[in-house]
Length: 247
Image (cartoon, rainbow, N blue to C red; front, side):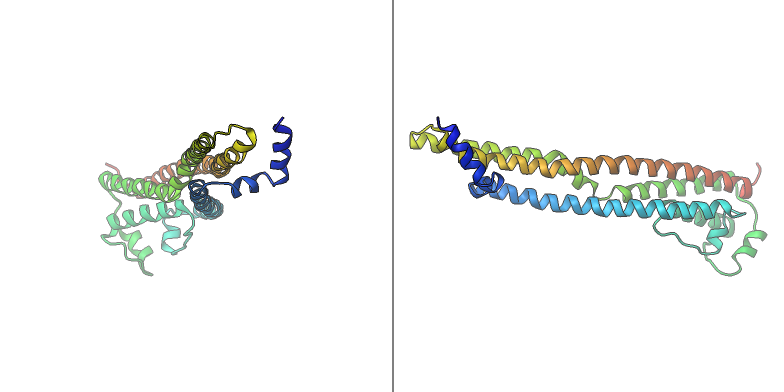
């Protein structure tokens, strides 16, 4: 007989707002922690989405210009820059290592083209060093792309458990209060139980968007990293065809 009375009372009180108002100090602290985590996870997602969009745009522009140039070092000699493109930094690392082995320095000046045309081609050992430089840069760019994604992974895995902790704690306090009051009616238990459940709801609201964002970013970063590996192989082949000395 208590249910028809307590349910309308709960609904009329605003549901979530009612639960928040009746949350314990421990539950409020957990909700605050979850809200702070949500702010961090959303900031990471928004920042990464903007970064991915810029990476795609600048990489497309860089690759278009690189593949239409006649020589692999043309963009390097002209000092053209695409700072938002990871492929550009792989290109820079490869070019600097190649120029170092050809000229003994990486100094860029107006005579670079003339000095390169007069220099000898590099040995297979030097070409291996060029490949290693590009591989290291691919790894560095992959780390930059993945930077701060640990926050999203933590939100996905940790927020539901933190919310569950608040719920279990709240239910425990509710039953302790019922036992001390010698009253087991639904009207006495409903406020405490609803307040306890709000932490689980908050944890899920934090974790679910972070899960979708994290999965999208993981797939995107993996795709960009594969594209970087492919570009490094393409650039190494172009260097070998033009600058590698026959054994």
